[in-house]
Amino acid sequence: MSAIPVPAGAPAAAQHKTVPERRPKRRWTGWGFVGPFMTVFAFVFLAPILYSIYLSLFQKRMVGGNQFVGLDNYTQLLADPQFWEAFRRVALFLVIQVPIMLTLSLLAALAIDSLKLYGTAFFRISIFMPYAVPAVVAALMWGFIYGNRFGLVGSLSDLLGVSIPDPLGANVILVSIGNIVTWEFVGYNMLIFYSSLKTIPHSLYEAAAIDGASEWRIITAIKIPALRGALGIATIFSIIGSFQLFNEPSILQSLAPNAITTYYTPNYYAYNLSFAGQQYNYSATVAIVMGLITMAVAYLVQLRGNREN
Amino acid sequence: MSKKTANAAVAHRGYNVENPRKSWLLTLVMGLMLIYTYLPLLWLFISSTKTQGDLFSTFGLWFGHDFALWDNIRETLTYNDGQFVRWFLNTLMYVVLGAGGSVLLSVLAGYGLAKFDFPGKNAVFAIVIGAVAVPGTALAVPTFLMFAKLGLTNTPWSVIIPSLISPFGLYLMWQFTRDAVPTELLEAARIDGASEFRTFRQVALPLLGPGIVTVALFAIVATWNNYFLPLIMLKDASWYPLTIGLNAWNAQAATAGGQAIFNLVITASLLTIIPLIAAFLSLQRFWQAGLASGGVKE
Image (tube, rainbow over all chains, first blue to last red; front, side):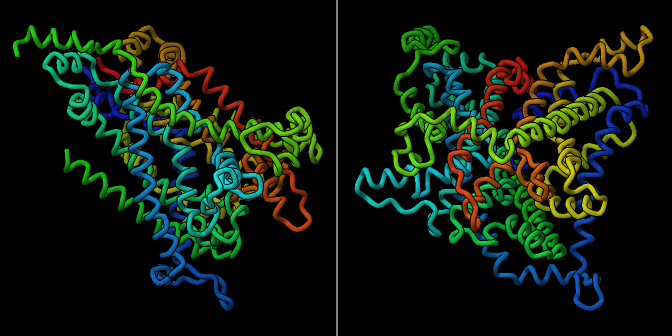
């Protein structure tokens, strides 16, 4: 889910067309086209959400089997130190990794859009390329590079004669995961920004240049404001991605068993609760609470973005 | 400054929107980013040419004593009765059925939303967009339990069915159809007596090419790289896709009595990413056009 691409700037530009010149007649025919999608959608999206809520209201008891317990699972979660530790970790990750990644993406998009690079097309496709690499392979590659067995970091330490802190150590591993996620998604976000920049009419730049605007002024007065929508979307998807962090810690776990706990991130916690601990009801509760928090944060960010407009 | 001198100044600085002066400095700075991007991939390639012994004993960014790439590939393909080939074919199947189905559903529904007004249309929008905000976490466990009750877990269906839905694909196709298919053209076909489906197939579909390529490419990546869903759904290694298989091979070294096969994990990783990178490179003209056309209005 963390990797849903979005054509930025599209909604605003296309909005004019929502009201067609001649309104099509209101008929049921459209359902013939939308129906198949919605049928599968109901089965793989709506039903599991409802089932999840249902599950979170029950508990498996030694005596009496499955019992309705109301909000007990939720009150238990609010007092669960493991959940909150996991939550604080992804929140910290979000606050540090996302701004770094989005800034790099933005700079790359502006550089490529400026047409001042030698080999613009090569840069564009190269920086995007890691998006095609599965998270499993990305985490394995970086994990091996980090590792002391045949890693680069170890070789580098020997070569320079200094001791670089172990990237797989408990203190540093969150940074190491941040690096993997940045590597995977810089190009993807760059592409969102870039396709949004492409929608700015070039006549605007010409007019600005004739009025004596500097390159820098064009960027701050024309390009950045035009990117506002794309930035908002990229931010929201990054928030969702951070709160759902799973693949990287799950794969690095075998390389850094002491640094990555079973409750390293909320998502990993939910996974381990259900598949190692058979605590399906509590696991569903963790998932719902994280879902609610994610939606609330995404909503607040969007609200702030709109107000600044 | 009068307009004329301003123009002259602009011309003097050589500012040209369409073809500005190239900058070595900017290229160099961006070159650092390129190094960052390619470093792990270079490491992966070099490492896949090494024997397991060389992996441990030689420098990561240079070749080892023996050039073992072909041996590694041969061993990867034959290890455990060709497990890797089986996983590769599984992945292909998931991509063809899952991503293929997802594109089909997205194209149909995108067209329906863009070109028809029907009862419940607004509800469809609200529900789909609302559901996108629900994190996958909240879905994974209940989907697993639901599928378990239906006897679908540990079958290919448990991976294929959820792959069929891509809200983003729907969104992109809706946008794309609205811009690329003129309603008048559809009206004309209808007046000529074509059925709705035939109008769609013969008039609209040919116009949707770049949009479909874009949606397809992103659906293929999502299915090819899918990890979480098959991880929880599949127990039987014979249904694994490549991603789960790779991780299983890697984890093997950590289990008691397990054989460490890092050279195979690395070579298999390389073989896993090559098809996707090839697809991206060969189709880049189409998908970049499709991605940009959602909002280009000049």
